[in-house]
Length: 289
Image 1 (tube, rainbow, N blue to C red):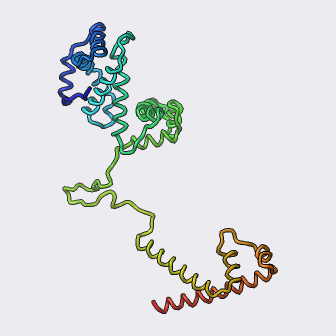
Image 2: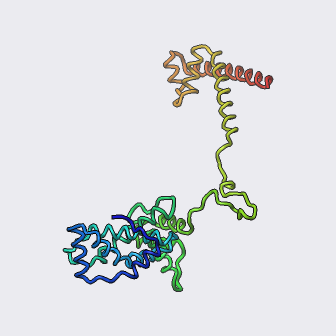
């Protein structure tokens, strides 16, 4: 089975010219297709129900997609229904095909309405396709609801959160807009695009590079300054100041076999050495600059 190959106008003409099928005639065509794969029977059955496809597609015209595409996708659903239809169940083909036609059209809309994929769950799909109708219904009459109240009413009716309703309402308020879309008519000489006015909170590239250079320089200064410490001073500074869980004076005293006051004195002397060494490096750098 293939997609309907004609244009939208061809589809309309073919649908209008196709005769209506009686129940027995419809059943006979369905049996011929199911049991014998009679392509002519399928074509007659499908063409006779193109009016149904067009009627269902028209209900989704407000989503802004080409009507021809909606009819095309509805025809795909119609052929899928023909492939699955069981004539022995004593159900009219139109009744059975309606669900497949609508499902095919809705799936096409969800895939193509926005570049952002939406309606991934059954509740989200119901929200997407019913929000406009429910919102318009609730805004009728004298007792109009506020937006939060309306969102909560719709959320309770469909089975989603009010936040989901608010988000979907904002998405349906307008189509996707390209960042390259000009803000002024190009014929009038405008060259600015929407992306030219986007703000970025991240630092500029030269600032990032400058910070990296400063960090490397400070690390080198600190390593040089640490070389001026003796092994005990170096151990105390590392365990007290450079580790994530700084050791206490008492713990270091027990580890080194000295009092915690002695640890404090050694630490203080080591920090003085580091300050002197770092000040000398800074002065040398400033003199060079």
